[in-house]
Length: 283
Image (tube, rainbow, N blue to C red; front, side, top):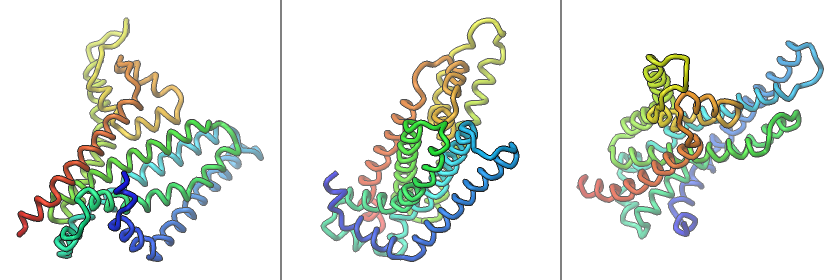
């Protein structure tokens, strides 16, 4: 951990990324778009209901939409930011120079990862004042908000680690990016589809009398799906519904944390191990 904060690679990458005007323009346009969405949603809802106030149940709906917008932001931007961290150095023929420095493989990998997701962290932090508008109208608990931020960070870290891993073991940036986006699509879309299929197959021959059969595989696919997890956080009753369908009592958030933290650790470990091996092979 100390190496992560005393890391010349991290400091250099942060300076290069945030000295560019494109980064701050990106934050500006993102906040403008979110503000337009929030105020447009509020005024549209008030005009449709014919009242001059914003109700707490509508505030919950706005919070759900904002949470899923930021989840989509994390899922689709993180692979693009991390999938070329090492392969781009290799394509520019600067990786060999980087490896001859006194920096360890872990410092290089963690510096590249943290600098890549720093921009997404900035977007999320910059959007916090917009989230505060939701609290003004009630209907949202601070615990829900903290859970959303926690699982956004865990998801971002896991997908970013997968992107760095593919960037380390694959020589071409475009191929690494395709592999990372493929992994993201599997975790966010295919797992949800498999969950529905497994539940349908499991309950196909089940009558309406008694509890449905236990489906551990269905619960696993529901557990690792980010959209399902966010639904359990922001929509009451989703957790009970999934538990009733799978008959598995293990909490979805616990399985999600274990799975994505394991992905993060394994991906970083393999990236560190494979970084200098690839360099030797390329000679």
